[in-house]
Image 1 (cartoon, helix red, strand yellow):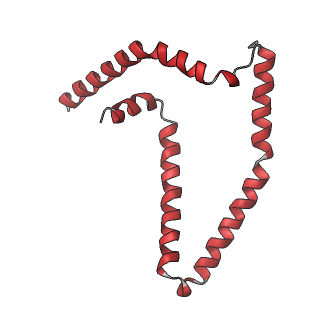
Image 2 (image 1 turned 90 degrees about the vertical axis):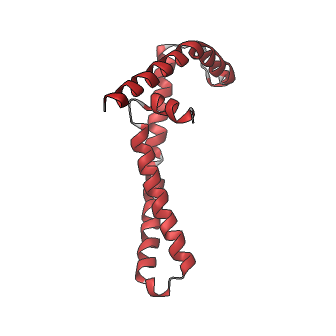
Amino acid sequence: MASKLVQLQSKAVQASNFVARHGGGYYKQLLEQNKQYIQDPPTVEKCSLLANQLLYTRLASIPGRYEAFWKELDYAKNLWKNRQELKVEGAGVAILFGLECFAWFCAGKLGTCQFMPVVFFFFSQG
C-alpha cells in the first residue's frame, strides 16, 4: 500500500510539473482560439447578464426535455408490453440504450470529481 502511495505522489508531482511548464502557454492558446466568445470589456454587469441568459435559457429548455423524457418512457413501456414480439435487434438496441444511460451517469459522476484534471493526466500518459 505504501508503494502505491509513493507512486501516486510521484504521478501528482509529474502532473504538477507538467501544468507548471505548459499551463501558461495552453491558457494563452485557449484564449486566442476562443477570442470570439470573449466579451469586451469584461464588466461585472456583462458577466451578470450572460449568467442570467444562460440560467433562463436552461430553464426554458426544461419543458422540451420533460416531454422528450415522457416520450422515451412511453416507448420503453410499449416495448416491455410487447416483449414477446421483440426481435434480437430490438433487444440489442434496448440494451445499448441502457448501457449508454449508465455510461452518461458514470461520466457525470466523474465530471464532478475535484481531481478530474489529475485523473485525466494519468490516463493520457498511456
